[in-house]
Image (tube, rainbow, N blue to C red):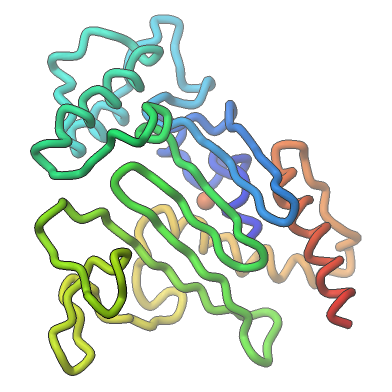
Length: 244
Ligand SMILES: [Fe+2]
């Protein structure tokens, strides 16, 4: 739960991300037990912005991979987010995705939520990543991590399942198979890649978990940038005390 709650680790763990997302000017919101951050994308970390404010090469490659017409863009990193949002809106009719109820910021930022106690999700204009963090039944040093990726589906391409209501966009095919919904795949850490970002995050976890058992461990030094972690543990301790 903790590692998804801050962008303080980005510089060390996800060095590529600094070129395409701002890990410093991140809004943090605490809603009691739940919390959120809003990390601007399509603008690099302030550490990666040169005096000419030019769009860096990593960003250019990322924009190309998303189909943004970078060759026709004459602005710099300060005007890029607006241009990307405008481009996404022009693509609405082609992709069949309705962005009319989303702000430019929602189209160009990572909206990350913690739903207490064990669900986190990243919201984008086109998709949502939802992570469910489940404890192992007997070993507190192990856990299950459920990764679910939800892509928005263009209107008219799929029919709603009458039994599931309007929120279920998939079609039952019989024998429990559901079109468009991939099979649940179960694997252990290291057996299979979970994508660059999550592999980078996961590579730190075993060491951190070992460190928690160190005789030198007296508690965590948590910076202001990590206040969502402080908030989570404040409520978590209260919640566990109540259970006891
Ligand atoms: Fe991370």
